[in-house]
Image (spheres, rainbow, N blue to C red):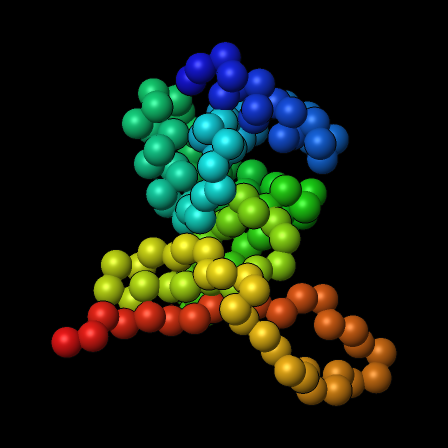
Length: 139
């Protein structure tokens, strides 16, 4: 990891007042160290940590990703009931999910428009709306 990548990861954690533990800093640097947005699963991030030569358990990766989401640094995007992606771009925006390879990418935000949402039950408010557009290769 380059000094610049470590600094980006450290600043990212500081933005949310998260203590920069070794594990958090390692994961943050992999996630935002190059300045690019990422869509990762816990498993893919765990594999990246191992490739980088660091040791962090898969359970720690899951817990840290949840902490990053709770702190507002990331958002969790659930594609189906069993698969979650974690997105370093925390603003509301739509996604494309490619069914053939299981990848998730950002979709152009300006092109997706919701005309109306249903009335919510009394005592509730809409926390957020996730738009995942599932794509399949044509023949």
